Image (spheres, rainbow, N blue to C red):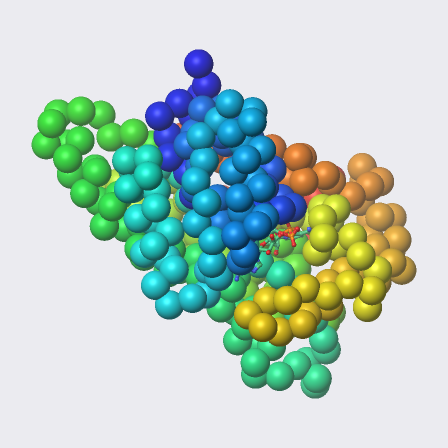
Amino acid sequence: MGKLDNKVAVVTGSGRGIGREVARKLAADGAAVVVNDLDEGPAKETVEIIEADGGRALACAGSVVEEGFAERFVQTAVNGFGGLDIVVNNAGYTWDTVIQKMTDEQWDAILDVHLKAPFRILRAAQPVIAAAVKAARAAGEPVPCRKVVNISSVAGLSGNPGQANYAAAKAGVTGLTKTLAKEWGRYNVTVNSVAFGWIKTRMTDVSAGEGTITVEGRQIKVGVNPELLEAMRTMIPLGRAGTPQEAAGAVYLLCAPESDYVSGQTLVCGGGFAL
Ligand SMILES: NC(=O)c1ccc[n+]([C@@H]2O[C@H](COP(=O)([O-])OP(=O)(O)OC[C@H]3O[C@@H](n4cnc5c(N)ncnc54)[C@H](O)[C@@H]3O)[C@@H](O)[C@H]2O)c1
């Protein structure tokens, strides 16, 4: 018996990094999970890992910023597993530079992936959740607690040089989270966010300039300057970066029944990193 038995979860950007570990953790506790990533390969790999561990998962590949993606994602959960109980908005990347060099394209791309995509996914989820709540009430059944966890960053709470676009998007995630917590209390949905500090993933692991990823046909540098990471390490009381598994643990807390009366909150997962 898992705590999330019979729950259906959707996790964006779960083909690697933190998202993959979130999908694995939810599935290990009984949830059926819809896995998403830009390309089919990583998404299918996560599905195979979950299935090999005895869990249930389906892939829904594609960019979260694509027109119609949100509806397709939600329908994959409904058609594949019969409902929607947990939404984790995690997909994203960084495209950094100082403000005087930041183009409109760079600003829009980061706002789209970190803020507009979660907005669209939650908008697409609303009719499904409202209908399920209505049906439960009509049948005289208790309305189960559903969960939304939006992924943010300490950059969105305190700012970070070179990340005007990312910090603004992640700060926006807090506003979206707090508003939805107020709108969706009537559906018994808790809406929270997790703001990560430094988690060791592809996003932060590669030295600046050494790695690029392709997103929507653009080549974008990944990784953080090693000197910056070293400076950050000295500011983290636990003295190290977090692992993707530890990051997933923080998300899991807000998906578990123990947090059924916690809503509208931001949980900082950063090894004690002080803002
Ligand atoms: N790693 C950190 O230190 C850190 C810190 C703060 C916040 N975060 C946040 O955590 C989340 C996960 O990041 P991560 O560190 O696991 O990075 P990651 O690069 O390891 O994983 C992110 C995943 O999202 C996918 N993705 C990117 N754009 C997408 C799109 N348009 N559609 C679908 N999938 C897309 C990528 O392909 C990748 O698989 C992000 O929202 C990130 O901003 C990470």
